[in-house]
Length: 71
Figure 1 (tube, rainbow, N blue to C red):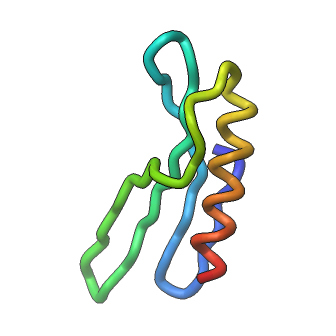
Figure 2 (figure 1 turned 90 degrees about the horizontal axis):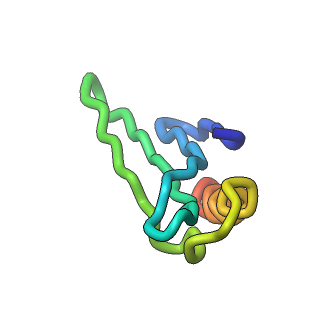
C-alpha cells in the first residue's frame, strides 16, 4: 500500500491483490466514517487490467485513488 490519503470523513488506500495467471490487479479501499459507523468499500473497477508486476498494478491503482479523492 503506497497511497493512503484522508479527505474529510473519507480515507482512500491503493492496494494490490493477486489475479489469475500469476498477474496482479490494483484496487482501492474507501473507508467512510458517518457518526459512530465505519463503512468500508473495496473497488477494483477503474484500476486497470491485471498486470505482470505488482508495481505496475499499484501505479494504476494510485492514479484511480487520486481521481476518487479529488471528487
